[in-house]
Amino acid sequence: MALVVEKYGGTSVGTLDRIDAVADRVARSRGAGDDIVVVVSAMAGETDRLLDLAHNIKLESGDGREEKVARSTATTGVAARELDVLLSTGEQVTIALLVLALHSKGIQAKSYTGAQVPIQTDSIYGKARILDIDPANVRTDLETGKVVVIAGFQGVDVDGNITTLGRGGTDTTAVAMAASLQADECRIYTDVEGVYTADPRIVPNARRLERITAEEMLELASLGAKVLQTRSVEFAGKYHVPLRVLSSFVDGPGTLITHEVGDMEQPLIAGIAYNGDEAKLTIRGVPDQPGVASRIFGPISKAHINVDMIIQNVGLDQTTDLTFTVKRDEYETARSILTQVAEDLGAHDVVGDNTLAKISIVGVGMRSHAGIASTMFEVLANEGINIELISTSEIKVSVGIADKYLELAVRSLHKEFNLDTTPLEDPLEPAES
Ligand code: ADP
Ligand code: ASP
Ligand code: MG
Image (cartoon, rainbow, N blue to C red; front, side, top):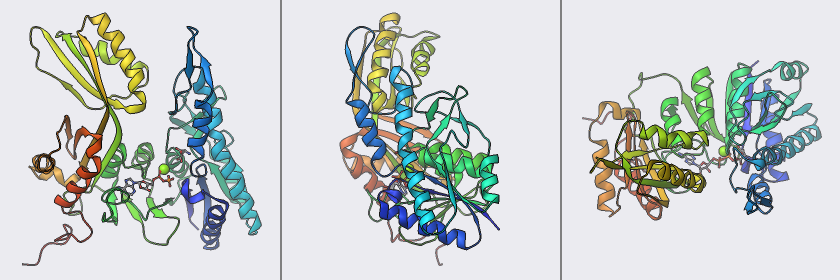
């Protein structure tokens, strides 16, 4: 008998009918004799609705000014703890409804919030990391024949505060539960039929991948392919959790995330990812001397803001310009921190642009092939798209461009790299000679 963790995302549990369909699917897996742990998201749109409610409450800030609760999840400030209390309710609704639906089909089941498992996290509200899971209670329920239904996206810190894991965090709960229970498989059920060569909503003739290496999936996820939360792929890699992405709407093989390295003939490019929510900041006329980068990025990282691409220009007149990108919802905070730093350093000024997008091509095949980056630049040039920032690693190339060109860039690259549904030749099949 196998132990399987099944995760259902927001759209998959978006209505009572959908929850009923999920209960049927779980009943089928249970009928096959497997032990089932289900991890669910909030019903579609619920997390956004809750964020919006909070956003409409005006807060009194320290200096008497009125301030709004951030529209994204927040990590610091008065509102951060309460936002997590609020957001965690979305998943709590779904676990109860799903257990009721399972009961109505004669299946024994029991719900758990993150804190009830318990899933221990650190105390970074809105972005908490899982530290430890005690699976004893869940195991006991499984042994008595119950299906266990766990609220995704949430945990509890050492002081008993409710925390959330960041948008898309239910994937991470599912993989972490699978790791902790040493499950035989973790299935991520979603609203598309697996992992595709690009977001099928942007590229209609994107192809479903039979399999993808965890390494490539990690890059795609961290570069914007939201089909899996990045941390869930990290967990899967670290604990070798067998992971599959499938549709909860139609039956099919989905996509297997593999953990072997380099023992297959790899396609050159596994896929293309995009992120339309980028922003860039430039601090101009910074004294060009040791220690400056750390004085700039120290305060930014203290505010838990992730910096992505960084460019430093060649210095002129003992000063230099430094540009970096952040997520758009952290732009204002980053900008005000940077403005303060600029003043302290005697820099010239700070300029920014919050209409940036990042497009990335990813593939382990790049390791053994030169010229991928230059092909990418050529494709974009032919479309008249200006590249503002570039960053590369062994298996990816990313560019920052104006967000209005996002779809055009993704589609052109998808076509030029031969990823469209009917490629001229399958890169996995050697061509007939
Ligand atoms: P869920 O609510 O099930 O967690 P998400 O909306 O978080 O679902 O993730 C699924 C979505 O990810 C798909 O609907 C698709 O638009 C998007 N997506 C982006 N890139 C890819 C990709 N390469 N392959 C598949 N889906 C992708
Ligand atoms: N409900 C949360 C979100 O919308 C977590 C998740 O769905 O994975 O981000
Ligand atoms: Mg998701």
